[in-house]
Length: 403
Image 1 (cartoon, rainbow, N blue to C red):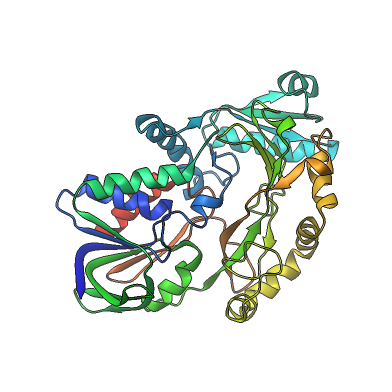
Image 2: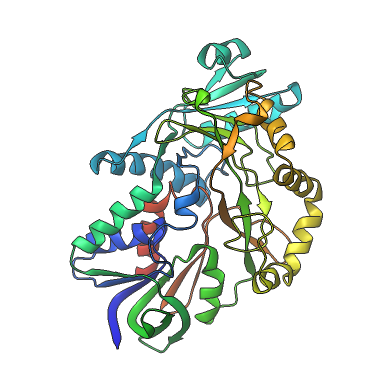
């Protein structure tokens, strides 16, 4: 049996969900099919992140990340309010923990202002008054940041798309091939429950997250990057730290890396997590340490860019590996700014995998990136802050589909 639609979306994470929603809202007669390999939506990056609604602190001024994050912050908060999704605009503190971080802090403060935010510089004493459990030599506050439950956001977007009557979401379907002709394309899938199926459409949008580069290859593209999986490991703090902070608390990050460092996060539900680190994982779904797959290892280590990246950032790679192998070392990263936390306070919590595009030269792709064939559009790189930026990304994709 073959099903047909105007638009086929691959992936029911938050970017695919936002696109499905925006398509049915903006194109009144459009028929949409969303194909998801899992049995439920938001099972990977969307459902395993920190839940932070980012404001656009870190990103190069004028980049897609900077522009879409700034727009997406307001749109995500508005969407949550409209659809009664738990959220809070709690603000974020970025704290310097030693004098040698002051210059980096000042540079980040200036970037905030370039990105249209209104940060407030704070002294050591002022931070102590706002957050008595936090130690620092200074920092600044960004009031626009917040928290939510992105699984709930994703599900609400899919509900809107489905309730239009013009969007069908099919789960447990793994794409095996894509055929593109002059004016139509066909997507083939397989499933243990339904067997082999086929879908025809006028245009395809690849929002497959961790598997986006593989789907692009099926469509005939040869991306010059590979998506590498970086595992972010979190801990849930013991209940005595519920409500330890009024804000999100972040260290000053390494400006050469797209990872933000181990931070304290207020979570929807009233508890607090700490994390994540950023460890090159052994697979795209290797959420646990020492999880191995020959196919996944080949995907990672057959790529020359992997080795070049590890060598260029060997010191950072070793530090991240140490934080994964040693809870004691992980604790030292937290105690830089919150020394009240002890080893016994680090309880188990789920990890996440971030899909990060890396060039064959071993260079990290810092911005959102897209690729296109005549009838297909591919989201090649959409790491954090993609969840915050999902609605602006969806609008961008619709514009690109029209061009």
